[in-house]
Length: 187
Image (tube, rainbow, N blue to C red; front, top):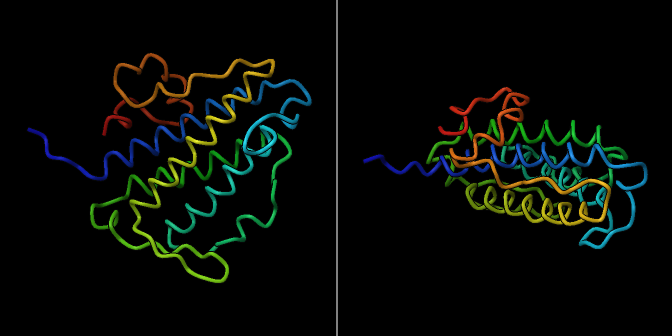
């Protein structure tokens, strides 16, 4: 009987996160002029603002998870990207940092304390809690962009076909684009 690996779910969530972001941003790259920044109903009032929020929050948390001190400097520019291409490139870079972090996790590291620099204070949290929060944050806001796409010329892409082996038929090209294999996802 296989033993439980407490790190494996976080690795798989990091892979899912990168794949879902890639698929969502590829769909957004096909938007017609004006649709990316057009006002929409959501927590943030446009696809552009929501996707910029995702990447800046990722910068904040991934830096903290890596032991950095970037803190609120991650938010100095509210919307650092005006176009999908630049945003997608930045998102892919931070997603790869998160994947690398999760691939290097150990059970001991998972329960270690992370320091998040919040300006006037340093928030101390367990790494597993910060990771769970970050993955939930990503899913929450990707879902909002997904819903916003329904009001554009681009159909919202499928975002939940990444983790289980039976879904391999849906992700082959995207895995190749990331330099991954099915074996990568099944570790």
